[in-house]
Amino acid sequence: RGVRGENQKFIGQGKERRPAGAGGDRRQTSTMAKVKLQSSDDEEFEVSKELAEMSTTIKNILEDMGDMDAPIPLPNVNGKILAKVIDYCKYHQEHPTPASDDKKDEKRTDDIIPWDQDFCKVDQATLFDLILAANYLDIKPLLDLTCKTVANMIKGKTPEEIRKTFNIKNDFTPEEEEQVRKENEWCEER
Image (cartoon, rainbow, N blue to C red; front, side):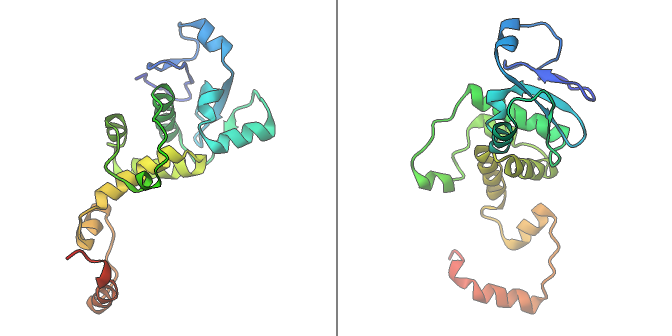
């Protein structure tokens, strides 16, 4: 992984990110259409158009605006999160996951590949920022992955354990909590 300084641009399609202007395969960078993305904190990232279009939001912007030299502003995504989203997209562009026709696979939470599991081993704030970015950028596989990760954090836990995991204050009175339990007995595992 490359080290990103303040307002440093990254280019390249390989596994290793390198700063703009660094040596490398000129053929690779000159023959592919490039797109500049600008995060909410004014960091710019240069990526291939193909990679950028993994985001339906960016794809729609490019279709509406045509090819443009100006960076595409992404006001809802900061540089740290955009860098992670780009890493995710690069990996999955190089290692495509076969699409499943089976709708029930969408509901599975135990089918996360090891690279994706490692990708999601981040603090909760980063994970939730990734969910928001995936939703805003409309990158369905990333949104599914991050939501499955949160679902796995909840799975098998009591309401009290979930509150503790996500630092949620219980604002129910004991009477209200008992009423909710009675109303939802049908979904309790016994």
